[in-house]
Image 1 (cartoon, protein in one colour):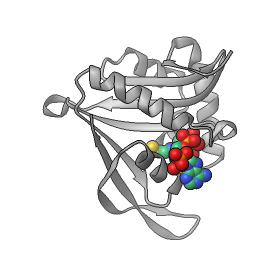
Image 2: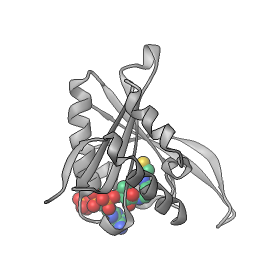
Image 3: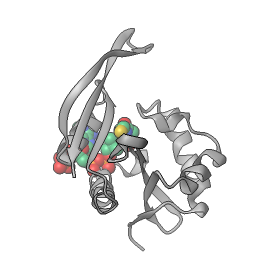
Length: 161
Ligand SMILES: CC(C)(COP(=O)(O)OP(=O)(O)OC[C@H]1O[C@@H](n2cnc3c(N)ncnc32)[C@H](O)[C@@H]1OP(=O)(O)O)[C@@H](O)C(=O)NCCC(=O)NCCS
């Protein structure tokens, strides 16, 4: 069938939960690992300020991208989170899904998109840089990494749309 980039649909939710559970087992450095309830994802679909796009091949979901719009005087901004299933990485899916989403968000009036990325997540750093994001600052020592016993920064990247 081939990979299609599209909005998240209700029928995708169980597959998305399963993908997030795999990310959690992998201990991926992405906030999706904390999401385990169908209801939470259903609320993303209902919320007009949360935009979710997937890469899908038939019933198989290989990537999820969520953009959360800011409130009030931050409504021109979105925060981006993206993850690709372990088995599908390295095939430009994250890059293509991000570019797909940014075009839609620009049409919706979003002016700036941000991504917060753990400073030890080199793959994700390269990914956002390859999509034209700029390093914009950091939140120093924001997380403690139990595996290494070290503090990790949140790096902030942005892209003007
Ligand atoms: C980060 C992630 C989304 C990348 O997905 P992907 O589909 O494999 O990435 P792509 O194939 O689209 O690659 C895009 C760019 O990322 C970089 N990249 C990809 N895999 C890489 C690797 N193993 N090592 C270093 N850089 C890598 C490259 O710069 C690549 O651009 P290029 O192909 O032009 O060189 C994926 O590794 C993932 O889901 N990780 C766990 C979740 C996560 O950390 N999300 C980020 C939080 S926002």
